[in-house]
Length: 361
Image (tube, rainbow, N blue to C red; front, side, top):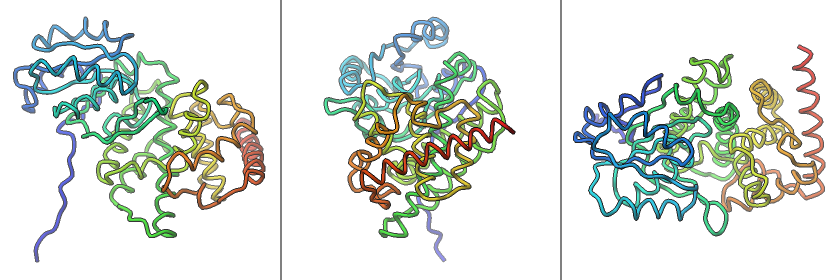
């Protein structure tokens, strides 16, 4: 009997630990990504100078570039700066902005990309998606996933705790996203990939069940590995389905409807996931999601994101328009504006009651 299999592109290296970035030159050489160290390194304007000063001695063959903004224009500027030279690869060292811009630039130039994360704000570390602002608002672009992923816990420890907590909201939302995907498969016949679902769920559950926090190396390692697995789930699926459902539609609606009031992506999708579980009537997952978000100091009510209940109801009504053709619990519920407002008020009251219960315990 012939053995059938599929080939899945995966990073050559996933290195999560303290001091990981000090090994960048060795990893580039050992994995034959760039034996000569002739790479373009992109960093952000805020922490980039310190990163360069700290690590450039071991990267003598590299040229350094600064990413200014998470936009299509910033990515094209980086392409134009890098194109005249010959490089073996592009390395992005930074948070989500730097990595998304660098992934897009690498795709345009046909070069492998190495992601060295200095933050854990969302699952874009190893994903095949680059999220960039454009003239119409914000868009998601398909790109090759990074060929190597480094997460240096020394640098993660210097990131703002709020931004790291945002990654918790993003990864926990996978459970809601996969529930949406399964519903789309069951009710609409949409193709589903069980392996991608398993990766996304395993990553989310590991973070949700961990009792540590962002000051704990063991928890940060679990979070970092979970975010990498979430990115790999999207590679397997060939799209963002395993990590993006109603939770992300709500976040996109905030980005587009209230662009000047955006919070961290993970904060928005975490709250969106809690609302999606409430719409499904799944008390166990609703409680578990609220408990996890509340425990880590993430938003659990619209007011925590600075929105009134009426504003959040508008966001929920607008959310399905952000991803035409994607079937989630929002499309399944097909709520009228009046019913949406009622559900939002009911959701807010249930979250309030749940958090009071947690506080008493």
